[in-house]
Length: 371
Image (cartoon, rainbow, N blue to C red; front, side):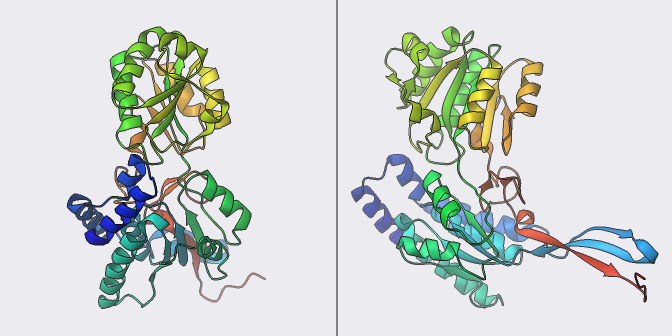
């Protein structure tokens, strides 16, 4: 597995992948161990299939219940992150689903090695053959084919704007959109500067090539003189390229001028768009216009402003005084995730085993008729 990943990394470097994307692609002993630990955690979860969500008495004495059932055949298209291959397979098998995996072409060798191991182990433990399948081709047509597969019950795309566009144009099966993460952090007028610097450095720099990394930093005009010189310096010292509006440039001249497209871009790299806004309401309007309903954060010492932000921002995860990097299935107690849904149906946020189930009604009677 590690040898196949080394070859993928060599090809990635030759193709000019950024350091952030190479980091996302890379495996090492620690990451392989983390993959194994994640699978063990998933295995230890209570089996969701058959879980009774409720029972009640209905008309004429019938008993009505609602239970969890698998979704069926799940397809997932995801970026060049080999760990997702293990996570997705483990979550689907635990929730009683079959899975068809379509990973990024940059990780093709790594994914083949991981999928082969998982398939063999599943078969040896009585799982029906074919329950874990990998589309082992770099051709784009394979992804289009998966989006249109008649017996696919649901498609889960994990990726950026290009994948989202392709799915909305080509999919003929139900899908749950995940992974599109133009995430913001807003520094409120009342923010504690030291706390704010710590949060934004983590949100941008801890792992910039993932969907819950911060892509735009919004700063209240009253906080800007205090925060910009120290906060942006801390980011620049970490190698972040800063692209700011006129006010940002006046306070931090080494930043580059921001363009309109910067506000809507997922950089997946050490690049950050920075804007000074007049109010909390202006920050929320900016997020509404450019955000992707993934993860949004406010840094504030005002309880009222925190509550306004929490109630007014429409996103899968909304933070007060914490980094957006926490939006993760493992962190939320799911062991791993199929993706982070930015939709409202039928799941939202990190998708664990329960989110990979549907429900059905079971009804007990003793000869009752409707008439």
